[in-house]
Image 1 (cartoon, rainbow, N blue to C red):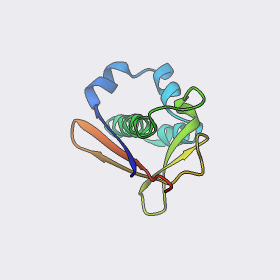
Image 2 (image 1 turned 60 degrees about the vertical axis):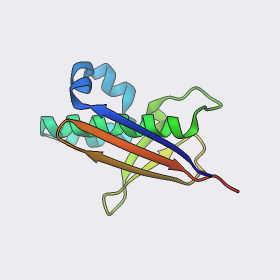
Image 3 (image 1 turned 135 degrees about the vertical axis):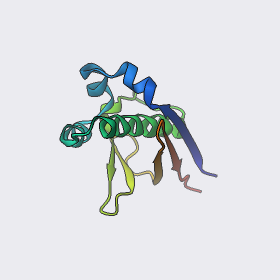
Image 4 (image 1 turned 45 degrees about the vertical axis):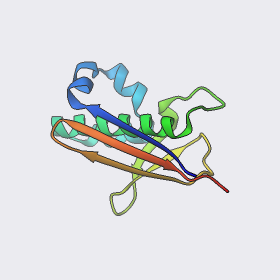
Length: 117
C-alpha cells in the first residue's frame, strides 16, 4: 500500500501572506534561485502556490518525521521534461511521485510515497 498526500492552495491566500519572510520560509535555496528569475507577477504567485501545495502534500504522505520538518530542506524541482520531483534531506532513499497542477485561482499537488513491501 502506498501513502498519498494531497493539498489545494488558493492563490488569493498566498497573495495575502506573501512577504520576503514567507517566501524565504517556504522556498529552498534552489527554488529561490528559480523564483527570483521569474519576471511575471502572476507566474511568481503560481510558482509559490505550487511549491507550497507540493510540500504540504509531501508532509501529508509521510504524516510524521523523525526531525522537525523545515520546508527549506525540501526542494520541488523539474526534470528535463518539466515534470516536478522532490529533492529532500528527509528520507532521500524513498521513491516519490509528485504532480502539480494550476488553474486560474488554485494550485493542487499530490505526492505518492511508494512503500517497500
